[in-house]
Image 1 (cartoon, one colour):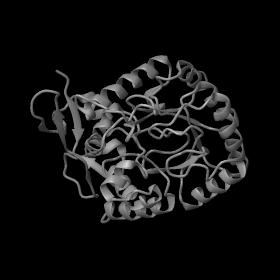
Image 2: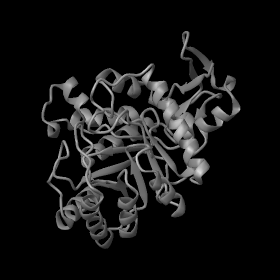
Image 3: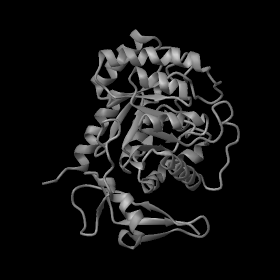
Image 4: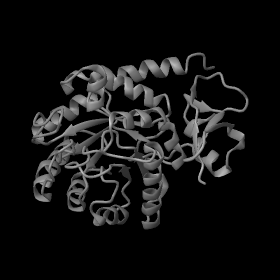
Length: 338
């Protein structure tokens, strides 16, 4: 029976002698793990008692992604150039409006800009490749000419990624976890592109219809582990793969909370971890904020909770507020360091 190891993450510079740095970071560490099995109760173990390879993956520094070091939390600013995204559809369409918004996000502290031309909100329909390319490629080209900032393309389609990469995108962020278009992973291999592989149950049109899991945390982990191996075997090394558990993608409120509470488990995959929870429906449900634009405080709270578990990238709408919160969290977490 497989055992999964979730580090119990601590923060602060004062650490016991047996503490290990979590993924090489300066703020987070662990010396105890929860050993989880699909059957039977979990147990707590000393980090010294877990398998050597698992301990190495949990403690080893991550290599830079798209030119960004992973030794601190990074902010991915969301740039939707779609007419129907759940939070900001239509506000930033077209090169001029998109460039202005990208400049604003960079000035507020975004480390990378994620450009998407297909809404993935629950119930959204698939966008033809030609339309998605027309929305995204000119925007990426405009940002590349006006800003020095890494960009990712949020797409499931190889031809969209090709056009985006030629325009200046440096990372491919696939919400299907590289299950939708087989040519997409092959394109990334051929062009040495780093990737983000996300878990989703179903596609955007159907993912909200009665999602079910045996154990959502472990099921998502197993999917991501399998996709990391798949991509590695194709030729994308683990060092160029980011993993995303896919909050809200075929998951209920209970599923989302289970993943958020145990998100440090995913460090065992040996990849940087990305969280995309900004303004999502479960935040509105828990905070009685029906308007997505009013979910900033809850979004920041979720981002900070993830960073406190060692998550390296948070994908957000509200860059300025998230950057300020991270600055204060980091100052507290490192207070007292020599």
